[in-house]
Amino acid sequence: MLESVHSADAPKAIGPYNQAIRAGDFLFCSGQIPLDPATGELVAGDVAAQTRRVMENVRAVLAAASATFANVAKTTIYLIDMNDFAAVNDVYGSYFSESRPARSTVAVAALPRGARVEIEVIAEL
Image 1 (cartoon, rainbow, N blue to C red):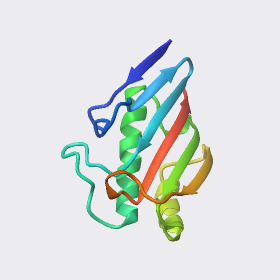
Image 2: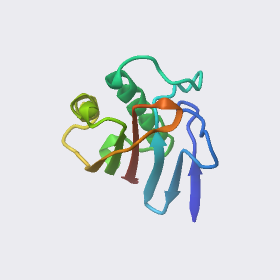
Image 3: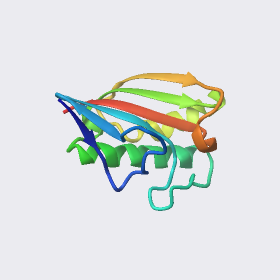
Image 4: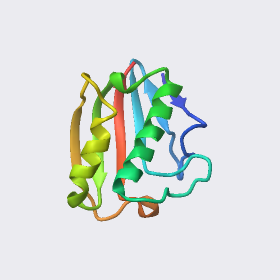
């Protein structure tokens, strides 16, 4: 059985999807972009600031399913510019301690709302 997961501390979905879906012992989180959950607007600042907001949004969705970054098994990072990789990697890495998930990083032509970074995660519950 699939169960929708929602956090008021993460931005509302901007399309016909859920923030996350619990499927058995797994949580599939939709990609988060750097939207401020209070305003629904893109946060100001460089790609590091955007990445921090993305990771805080991911944290909120994980928490809604009683999970943390320690539960994350796989992430996918989408960047509009691979020159941002080092800055994104620094912020991203600060959210994981010994439990470092598998990861893919993909360059894309554009992201919703003009975001520079989007991150999606799969977690084991």
